Image 1 (tube, rainbow, N blue to C red):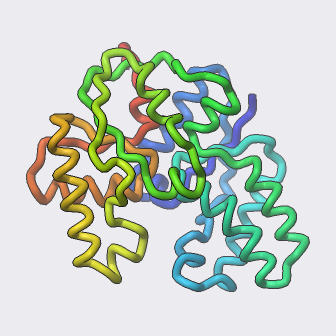
Image 2: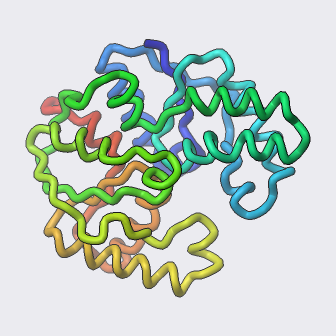
Length: 244
């Protein structure tokens, strides 16, 4: 299968390993992965802060960039949620009804990594090997917008050598929420403290997630505590093998 990668802003600028791991994994499974160089931001941060008109050019760019691909994947439940649930809405609100229809259709072909693997490619055992004790943080957008459910956990349970431990209060927000962490810093910090306490209680050496934004927030907090717990994107775990 020929799959187009939407890398996302954070993967491009801060977490390139997540995008690289997505490509490595899919190619190992026998698929061709292409990277359209015209891609930029999906516009989520603009929409979430009320700048729908300013987001419209980014919606147009996404639709135009990925119009020729049957399957699009992004290592981010947050960005995929925005593409599916905001792009058509933004276009319609700006009077671009033709674009809205195209955005809806393009969004339907855009998948978060775990749902692409499980729902589209029909695979749960990707041949990964990762000999660490891991706990998984299910990010808000992946649960509530993209609705990936337990797909990431099903994939992790098949990883050889991995000791998967349940995260208490797993579905509670880590406190990032984009600009929420900036505008409501005290509340965000309190939410993060609860999340880090729960992570520490598992005895895991790694906290995994499917969104780099949450990993950045949690990882920053753990670093400030001089914690030995690391943060790793789901794609990096699934791309790991015994020979890595």
